[in-house]
Length: 272
Image (cartoon, rainbow, N blue to C red; front, top):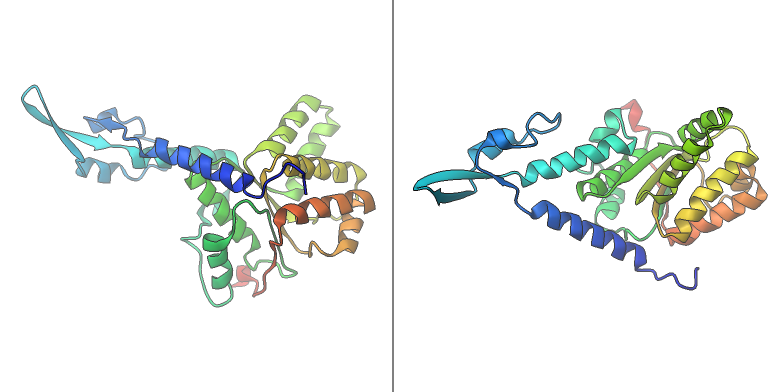
């Protein structure tokens, strides 16, 4: 554990960001004519009709009563749309929220823990030997929750990260590589899915993953992982990332996860 690191640092920073963003979002953007709304025409804005039919404030100007419309809801939706476009999420991931989750005896307790009891200062490492039983859905739902509160998120599969960086490496585009690495290291919430799924051992990639995780560890940046193997499986960590880097990566994840290494069970829901 770092000497200067305090357990409440991460959760306090996240709380400060959420409170600041909520304060901005609660601030009324009031217009007197719906035609003046800056959000009209945005692809995911579906609240215009409701806004037009609800006059929150009526004031007297020049002896005439003018309806004023609060566009706060649209502003929040607009911010979420911007964050989604930068998040790396696509397709069905865009709808994978806690609200939309199909709940049953297999996943209810797990989802409730993430919604209500998980301390957001702790990294999460969610694993299962079974594919399709809700690992990715769970971290995607968390990502949506953060974006709902105005916090930037990046969701990436490790295989995609490898391919993206390797292509730039082959083209010797070091400037873009550095920019991508900086984003991976500094985004407030990074979600790495299918961690350890690369089918080949690479000293170069082990070094890249160590750099990302080490920088996020040192700077207290929240990081979530999904995987098919247990973080405590040291043999697997050594086989995938090498003995030196594998142990260093495992140690940092375990240290920030603070016991939040969660094995989930249940069926492959993709076959339902």
